[in-house]
Amino acid sequence: MTRKHPSLRVKLLRQLRPWHRRIGIVSTLLVVFIAVTGVLINHSNHLSLDTAQVKQGWLLDYYGIKAPTDVALYQASPQPLISSEAQLWLEDKLILEASSQVLGATVHNEMIVAIDRRHLYLLSPQGELFETQSLATGLPENLEALGQSEGLWLKTATGLYMADTDLIEWTQAQPFAAIDWVKPIDSPETVEFAQQIRSSHLSWERVLLDLHSGRFFGTLGPWIMDLVALSMLIMAFTGFYIWLQHKPPRKKKVGLKRRF
Image (tube, rainbow, N blue to C red):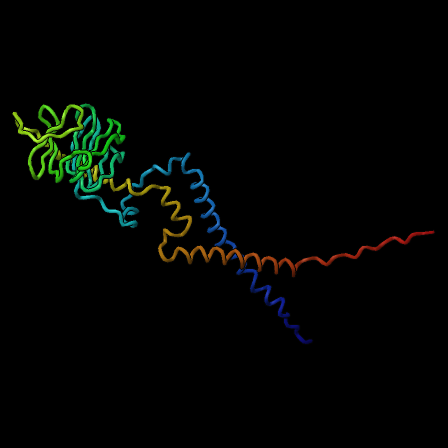
């Protein structure tokens, strides 16, 4: 007896079935991953993921986020008042983005006062910006330091200036007593504040968005998303072909002859 060789169709089916299963498993894992991250992103506000800060050092390193080295603590209680470059923080809340590096910050008459080289900022105790003063509003230029001595004082390249009680007008003057110039407080908590500021630059919502879109994996990200789409297409075509080959033949309906 001659052995009958399997047809091309049978050979193709034998090859497709295991690959269909393997691709199906990989595709399922990728689709589940995308679905889970998508659901979390849709509800990030309710889950507070948009405000939850990433504290894992390895993840912050992966994003290239370094801890600031120029952190200055100006007030330890009731809430820490901290500056880092052009930013001013009230505990863990960013309250000011100055035009340049913050030179000093203090509390005066229940208001937070901060300066950079050319501006003075007045904020509420909760950190809301009330007013920004500059040379156009009568503020002296080339600010160097901020201090208090029976009032608010500014040190500039051209001399000392004292503010009126409403902190509106500045007059060049000489103090009758020593001025307490604002200086950073030397505290071991500065390192902790630096890590806190570092964490504030990355939220879990951002991480989820990058994972969902593939940007988290850098240049490989678009290829991974393309792989997901390609695997789904392969699954669809191979599944349809296998179904066609096993589709039962349609039975012809036998009509009843009408009797007259």
